[in-house]
Length: 234
Image 1 (cartoon, rainbow, N blue to C red):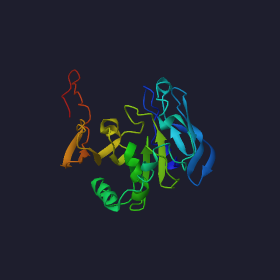
Image 2 (image 1 turned 135 degrees about the vertical axis):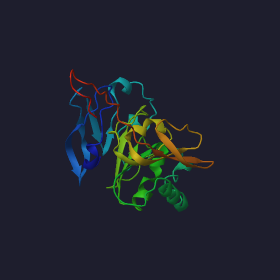
Image 3 (image 1 turned 120 degrees about the horizontal axis):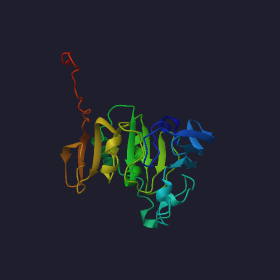
Image 4 (image 1 turned 45 degrees about the vertical axis):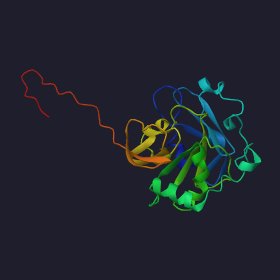
């Protein structure tokens, strides 16, 4: 987990949103390879093992399927236990990578790109195209370590525990879980059969995917009150 991204992570438990405190036992450059993330509100401690942060609420941990890859903290450079004929799926065709980059609007450097589930297969190829940080959430398979890629396990949480408005663009099969994390104007890519979540305006669609843009959230209305004997002011 890259130190730059630690400040963006949030405790998944149902309380006021807050940053997490990182404790590093082993570093690789600016990546925390072994350590923990602690919540200052509920005091829950989340482990970082082999560079992978496991932000699974204790309330949900017991319900994780036994065969869920997030249930095991194995080195990130070891392959997941998957069928042999699927072993090469992580090497996406160049045309597919370029298409995903275009949908996510990765023309300029900077920012954080979020890839959820199977979209994590594109992380290494996309990192070669644009200078940005990539946060892969609940990947279907493990991949070799890369300095621009961080990995987080949530066991399929209803909401990805990332600060509101922190993400530049995202590709996910469950977009409703990440809308709040995308900054206004950020791109959201999802399968065509996935409903468009509230707060997302559709930009384009084909048989396979839709591309949306996160709309700005308006601030709460301000109630104006006039004091006794004073004119109302705006």
